[in-house]
Image 1 (cartoon, rainbow over the protein chains, first blue to last red):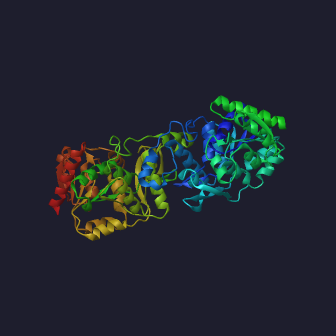
Image 2 (cartoon, one colour; image 1 turned 45 degrees about the vertical axis):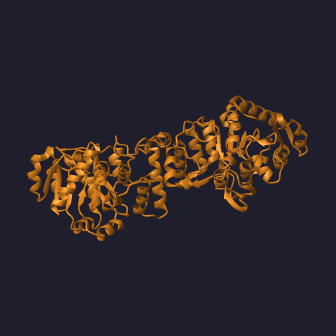
Image 3 (cartoon, rainbow over the protein chains, first blue to last red; image 1 turned 135 degrees about the horizontal axis):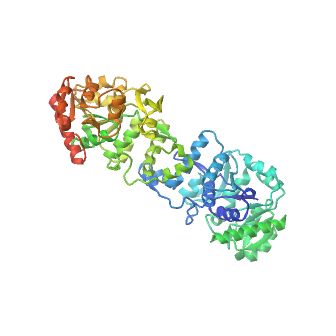
Amino acid sequence: MIALSGGVGGAKLALGLSKILPADEFLIVANTGDDFEHLGFYICPDIDTLLYTLGGVCNTETGWGRADETWQFMEELKSTNPEEAWFLLGDKDLETHRYRTAALGRGDSLTDVTARLAAKFGVLPRIVPMSDDPVHTHVLADMAGEERWFPFQEYFVRYRCEPRTVRIEFRGEASVSTALETALSDGPVAAVVVCPSNPYLSVDPILSVDRMSRLLRSSGAPVVAVSPVVGGRALKGPTAKIMRELGLESDVEAIARHYSGFVDGLVIDETDTESARSVATHGLSVAVTNTVMKSLGDRKQLAREVLEFAASLG
Amino acid sequence: MIALSGGVGGAKLALGLSKILPADEFLIVANTGDDFEHLGFYICPDIDTLLYTLGGVCNTETGWGRADETWQFMEELKSTNPEEAWFLLGDKDLETHRYRTAALGRGDSLTDVTARLAAKFGVLPRIVPMSDDPVHTHVLADMAGEERWFPFQEYFVRYRCEPRTVRIEFRGEASVSTALETALSDGPVAAVVVCPSNPYLSVDPILSVDRMSRLLRSSGAPVVAVSPVVGGRALKGPTAKIMRELGLESDVEAIARHYSGFVDGLVIDETDTESARSVATHGLSVAVTNTVMKSLGDRKQLAREVLEFAASLG
């Protein structure tokens, strides 16, 4: 089973899947378009959220960062580099970035570094970056009447997605990571699941990697996505806002249209039952269930239903 | 007034001096022979101890590191790089190293970086590195019957000065830092004070810098040292142990012999009153007082007496 995931929202389903699948049958492809260098550290927000979530050390209130974190480094940073203090780096979290930065500096691949971090956090399913080549998401957005390109984290964290999105671009020539390619050629894949991450900011960067969607499709596995939009809203993050800014309705039909051609089926929330037919008009099978994951039980339940849905399409 | 200082012991007197001298008449030359790169950070232990001590943010129990420090980064490090966890890096402290490393990487001089850090910590007297060129102290020492060269911090921290010292070497071609040279040419210097730091590990690296002792001597200012040895023991660190290993008596006479030719006078502790005469045989003036600095009052009192002693030799 292969899951494509961004950060917080995707990691919830990935955690549910990790609880019901044998570890060696589950591989998570993480978005790395958000990765950036900051204060001398190479930071991979989505990989870290996946590591922390599946490692059981994530701050469950925020959905990102470490549990029982302290912010002493950050407090100091405010007095030396206040203008750089917009990205929160916890004291524990920092060692992850330091370790990765040092290892990449020695020439290790992001795949290898991620595997070693997974071992540290006791994460058994494989988490692989979409590519070992850097890809950087940039957002053309309008801030105070002026359009400019924002590196992803500036748009997302520094300016809290406030500038109006005009266009999104993924910069960098990237090949599918070897680990993913090997996994795909190693044997049959039961399903490809697109987690309920932001389609534009978290999933599209993965699919933008050269040959990615073709390789995933050619595995022959059914591909299903879980809608990140429920009742016209995104449960987390700026998905709905971005959809409106891009001139789209923020509804499951727009999600279906976006993913059509790549996914075979879409899982939508009960709230959107009446949109099932319009999703089907885009050639997709539909499953309707509760997609709002509040408890660990919700995560496992959704994971189970997603896998059953995929199996029914196989 | 110019003080030469290493870490903890020297910083105590430097603090006392800073309390009684106008800030613009006080310059501290810090040993940088202990500086090293570790985990991707460029760490200057003696400069940091001076910054934290004079900035009033030092852990007064240990004499180094930050007050109210936490160790979350360190705890994490133990699980990723346990073999590199021998040098303690507190969460607050870390930002100092990160900031310095980034600035040096951009090509800033250590003098400039130190000045900016001093401003951050509200330190008014100038703290300047002995040189902007890297110098690295190495210790040839016998560990378990085998002699090998230890980079300073490995000897000092990792192996807690346990290997038997055979020889000490300062590696690197270093020029006196421009800030110090300017200060010396700018006007008369009232005194040069060698703080009660380890003569072999902390003061000798400073004096090993090309032209350093000549420049300090040619200022015409009286040069006085405060003995780091009291009653045959060092109050802090391995001074006495190293003296014995180098075949010296660990007493103030050996300190006098070591500094003779560079200093005009030596301040010794009351405990060593009876050694005053033997110090004088090395051509040095002697002042006897309490050199054991327990309170801030002690530090100021010693600072006052050292300055008076120097003035009496002027």
